[in-house]
Amino acid sequence: MNNNNRFLTLFMILLFSFFGVVIAVALVVFLLRLFSMAVINIPGFTEFYGYMMLIVPYGLFFTTYYFLRSKLALASKTARIVGTLFYTLGLLACIASLIIASVNFIKTINHVELSFEDLSPYFLVIQLAFIFIITMTLGLGDAKEKDWMDKHKGN
Image 1 (cartoon, rainbow, N blue to C red):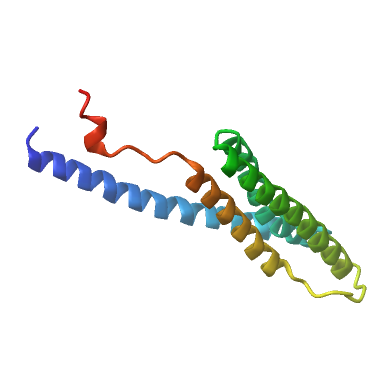
Image 2 (spheres, rainbow, N blue to C red):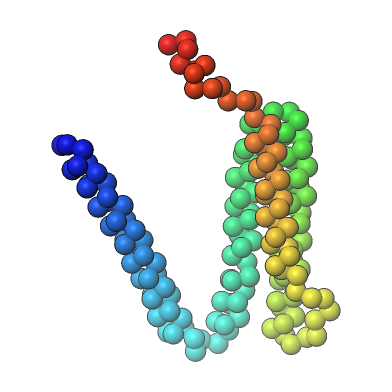
């Protein structure tokens, strides 16, 4: 196979992959719309859907914290201490914000007057900041990587 065939093959793979992803996303959106039209008349489904949309970001953050917990054990001692501090603060903030958002959601469903504003977007930004700080701490705590010339010098 010459270089032109390789280039054409790579180009076609990339092109069909792009169109495949676009078609897959469109199909998922269509199926979700069809599903929502089918279950819209079920009592309580709107509240269930609203609560699912509320907890999905927190599920992603808890998954990220779970992944970062395994990476903290591999870091250097200083990075582990600082990372664990921010990990604990971030996890506690995530749990507290989930509880506050859930209470606010339940009060909204029951039409009780809200006693505090919904600060969920700010809590989500705070979670992103904590995750960014933890990953920065882990990155700064790693040993310096060898230059590619030094790696191959011994060979």
